[in-house]
Image (tube, rainbow, N blue to C red):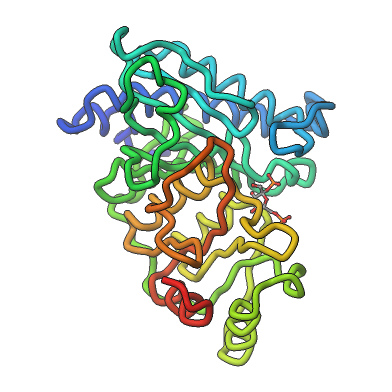
Length: 321
Ligand code: FDP
């Protein structure tokens, strides 16, 4: 029986620096609980498979992508501190309220990352990023397009063998697990640090023929240096393992897709924020990922993140930083 009663809400409300962010994170956590239930029941409720529409990226939306996006929107709509919601599943940002109405934050999310894995019961997750609504209300939609280092909070909810919420408010990284008895996220680890080195690389190596020469050279070097490979194919699960066990996660550009597949604002930036807050490194292969100034909402980016020592090995081969 659980004795851990330090819930996410109680911990946040005791934080004098958290302010109105508390209600934003609580809204995201509530959506996470609702999505977790839907993911668990997906086969039973017959919500597996494609929704019949494609998103703005031209990718087939899964029924659960659409459901998760709606649940997140509804939770944020009821949160007075949120001005804007932008999602991988929607063409444009949704203005919920203005700063004049007291709303200070923009929330960006990949509502259900790794969703092509749902029908085989592999871990999926919700990735989120919170930024300040920094522009005048007349430019409210573009307010969500900010460099990663300007995030005020980021994290993810992982729907795996347990439901895990990882959160950074810019002062380290904490991990919470949904206690099914309490129906609440309880703190299980604070001040998480990514191991500085770990001989694991995580990449879809099937695309290797299309990788740039430096990356092929890194993989050759890793093959000869005692490395192991781990690739779930669900970013949120691969990054979570990297956070806890170390190693390097890569989704690079290829000849066909020079900017890779992952979205900067919904996947790259929030995961980079978490990893760097835990003492790791995040790069595009050309420079720090958190320094990239986005030009548009749905921009893609190559991603190299994880243990500082492991990312350094990759960058040494790529000639980047
Ligand atoms: P998915 O398409 O299943 O949503 O962001 C998309 C993503 O999954 C990531 O979660 C995952 O890391 C990546 O795509 C897997 O792509 P590949 O199949 O090309 O390796």
